[in-house]
Image 1 (cartoon, rainbow, N blue to C red):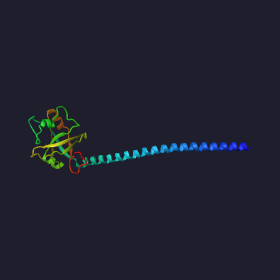
Image 2 (image 1 turned 60 degrees about the vertical axis):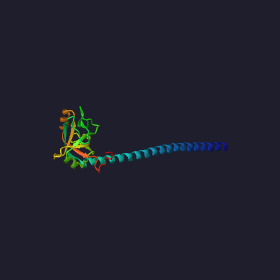
Image 3 (image 1 turned 135 degrees about the vertical axis):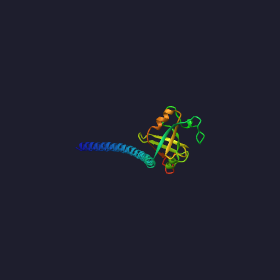
Length: 189
């Protein structure tokens, strides 16, 4: 009987010890998983903060574009090859493209005195032209002036190809925003 009690006590001890060992290993695995998940959560939180900062900057830029846009008349012209701008660049090389205006390039423009005043633009400022119908945006560099007698807010774009000038000039209404202004959130301009 003593042996039986001893064997039962030993079996109970082994069962209890095994249970404690298995629970300890499970606990260790859960702690390890929890640590991994905690690191992933911290990483996700920091990525979320970066995204929030970028989103706030984008909203600020979009708000700036909406707040300061002014209606302008964009006109396409064909330039004579001998014509030059005030900075000495030939018009054909400064403005023109033979087939179509590249969307990823900065184009050079001339502003009328009224457009310059309304946009608070200075020579060498960057202006974004926003087509009202399609909301396509084109970055432009203010490099010269139109005729000083011009009373409309005109933006002139010159082309080597007359057909392209006609197409550009018929694209509809535009809004313009000066990206280089003192309150602009577009720092690189």
